[in-house]
Amino acid sequence: MRTIGLLGGMSWESSIEYYRMLNEAVRERVGGLHSAECVMWSVDFAGIEELQRNGDWNAAAHRLAGLARRLEQAGAECLVLCTNTMHRLADEIQAAIDIPLLHIADATARRIKAAGIDSVGLLATRYTMEQDFYRGRLAELHGLQVLVPPEPDLTLVHDVIYQELCRGSVLDGSREQYRRVIAQLEAAGAEGIIYGCTEIDLLVGPDDASVPVFDSTRIHVEAAVDWALDPTDPVHART
Image (cartoon, rainbow, N blue to C red; front, side):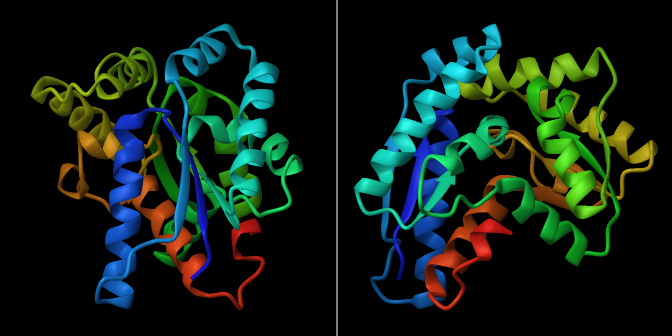
């Protein structure tokens, strides 16, 4: 089994889910007392969120790239960045390390394409929904049509993530609002829905949509376990 490096804390609420699901997946696949070989660095999210808000992506890249190198030095053989939004810096982080970074958008897109779906709705942070690093990758590399909510729902989805889910608050009213937004994306033509923020699965699940749901957190974890348990696949994390 290869060692997975987890760069988390963005937020720690979802990083807990990464660690739990990672170990559960290894136990389910291998059995017995097996668990994942992994190392984690969990950041203080307040500083990262301030850099996001101020648009200082260069400083954020410098910070995360340095931590990725430290995970590599600690024995990680693959890097899992436990956040969708900070995949905006995936190229900068990958350039700083010699181990592969498993890209969450690629893992999610492979699952979507395997399901025969071409048009998906995306729920995520404002950065992920508005900027091209995620939507563009899904479209250009994987041929997917990506729909996002219009305003004011785009802001609502973003605010629930930062003001509630990242603070450990899961509210029934917000769940109903997300269900409404999901239904509108379906009406606009989405054949599936991406939960494209690692906290969203704390609020809604597969039963909150009438089309297939692609939980990026769980998909990312399962791809990491695939990689860790298959030492003959050196390039899986780069594709």
